[in-house]
Image 1 (tube, one colour):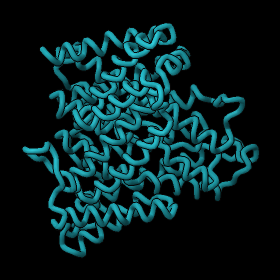
Image 2 (image 1 turned 30 degrees about the vertical axis):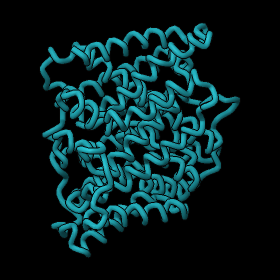
Image 3 (image 1 turned 90 degrees about the vertical axis):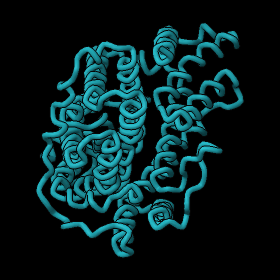
Length: 433
């Protein structure tokens, strides 16, 4: 076992890898409860999504560990699940089954891109500023959802939104959870988001805001309501410009989120040599395969988690740490009764904190250059204001070639960006019909 994973070459041991795997799991275990909450808003069965989330995370992480030998864990991605539920299903009116098919197709395209080796071409085609803007915009969108679920931000006929009733018991619980989670994160506690959810749930039960669960350990929820539903669809709804945009958005966000996460975690572990990532294709293949598998199981896009860096910090250097994390996700399947205590107010702090972390990419944008600042800013701001990640990305991709041409830099824009300009322009024309 140690020879297969290369313990000696990587200066690690079983003990280090097990601790790293456990650390990574605790850092990202919040997704087991947040993902069902978000996809449940799209009309999906919460119990089935819980099972699909755990299985997708376990299988994806296991493939990453065994195939690419990296201490990187995968699970349904934050931001992509919000896009799935709020933009695609609730915003565009697409059935969640069709949306799952869109996720499945984005995974297949990702696999094809990886196998034919055009990864670098696509990465270089889209400017870094738009990638940063998309990440930050998704962060603001997620944080806005968290503030809404907490009751801190509520609808208003006069001003669109306004401050909610802060002294409402459920809102106070969410604020308590946010404060506790912030303290844990600032103090550098690994798994701070997960522990924050536990403490918030306990506080809710003690104060009577949340009902006591029937138990802690229970039977694994049936996967039947979501398994294979990606193909139980009206196929006439597949061949539309609208679904094409959905698939491209799933692919775009997953592709660059994964590439960024892989590079960041691998660099932290000391794997990157001469700006090159060893076994990059295997890692990307693991991620793309997990996306399609997750769609079949019944969850939104499965992707690499930046929380894996906590496991690397704990000493993880091989895929054995990922195997440990995967096994822990399997064990977590038996803790489904806890879904009853993980209410919107409990998950809201997690959404807000993740949003804050994603918004940090705003600092990487060159705001002094208007040809960059304009499309970047409108990408960021329109996501939460239109309640649509796809709309924000579309606006950015349309405006970027325009501002660059006006600046006299049209030749610096990759031809692929001009193609996407017309694709996203058709998206808005289609929406107006």
